[in-house]
Length: 140
Image: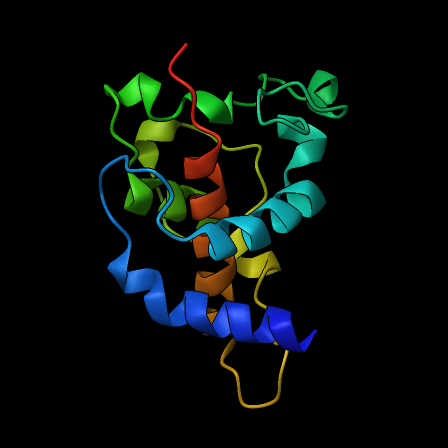
């Protein structure tokens, strides 16, 4: 638990430093934390490997996105800020239409430690998810 708190504190402080372009994951520790969060919160819809084929996908109106091709769909660029905003969900992104995905910015906001602001926790958790998603990008 202490390691997770330290990792989230590092993530929360680094959220403003995220790159706007697709680069190899520069934060492997954050990506590892993100992999754990991904399996807990995202894999049921997006699948264990992020290809949109999770066990809950069949129950949704639209198939979940293949998260391994985010950069490929954007000419090789991984839009960190856009993806973080979409995961958060508390800010309207009309270009994406309606959303079946939960508003994770609300659900990830529970505090892990006394004195930690929930928004810091949310930003940290989202940053780890973004780093993980960057690490699973494929071009094929």
